[in-house]
Structure formats: C-alpha cells, structure tokens
Amino acid sequence: MDSKAKLILHPVRMKIVQTLIGGKELNVGQMAERLTNVPQATLYRHLNKLLDAGIIKVIKENQIRGTVEKIYALADHQVASKEEMENLSKDEQLHLFLTFMTYLLGQYEQYLNQDEFDLYRDGVLFREAIVYLSDEEYNEFLTGLTKLMKSIMGNEPSKDRSERHIATIVIPEAKH
Image (cartoon, rainbow, N blue to C red; front, side):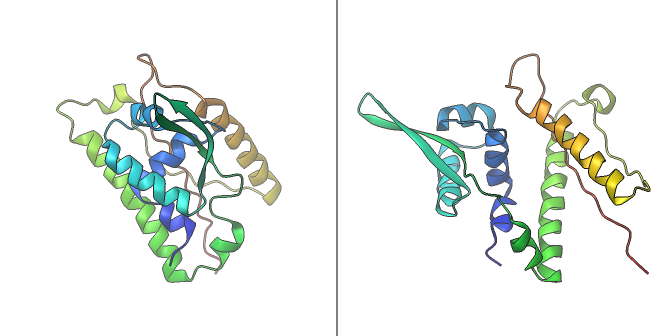
C-alpha cells in the first residue's frame, strides 16, 4: 500500500502537514520552531518524501546570502482523495486506522512521560458520545465542526498558547 494517506500517517510527516494546514506558507526554520522535537536533518528527509509524493510543494525560492530558502505549502489537491480511500482493502483500511491510533497513543505517552503533568489543568480530554443524527443533521454538525476547527487552526504559536492535539474519529454503528 503506497497511498498518500499511509505516507502522511508517519508521526513526523503528519506534524509537517499539520503545520501547513490553513494555507500556511513556511520555510524550514519556521517549521522547526513549531516542531521542536524534530531534528533538522529528519525534518528535511520527511519534507523531501512529502514533496516527492506531491503532498506539499515549494511555492517560493528566496535567495539569501548565497543559499536558497524554500517556502513550502500544501499542494492544492486533497491529501487522500475519496477515490484513493475507497480503493483500499479492508486490511489496508484497518492498517491506516491502527497507524493513526498508534500515533495518538504515542502523543499521549509523550505527554505522560513529562516530569510533571496535570490532566485537568492541561485540558486532557478523551471521550465517546453516541449521537443519533439524520444525514442532514450529521452534515450540519460536520460543517459546524469544520468551521470551528478552521477558526483556531490559524493561531500562531506564542508563549500564551499551549500546543494541543485534537483528533476526530467518527465511526458509524455497523448495520445488522
């Protein structure tokens, strides 16, 4: 399975893509400021994989003191198209989901491995809610959630802001 979804689900590449969401255009230094746990050599290696796959693109090249600074952005097309996702086998779908869940587990483990943490103060939250929605109600919910997420995804890092990972998983009940 050489899908773009699988390529993106690597923890470092997922973080790179997330830094560019919302139309952001960043150079390697700006990405490194946001991805403090990623060594610069590793960042370059994963940027090149994303470039080769057409997931990101270089939108500008600036000449600075004899070197070329590249500015990166997400490519214009969908990262994982509907067609690509539909063409994955059941086993490939499960593998992608397991990779995603493993990524989340790793993020949570990193949080818990700190010398000090406070779940309540830090706003740690995970829960499941079972809801009953018509297709129209569900689409309205997704539209509202997307609008809300877009409104905060453009926030730049600052000393007053803590990085938080918000993951969304929607699984319909199996039809019997």
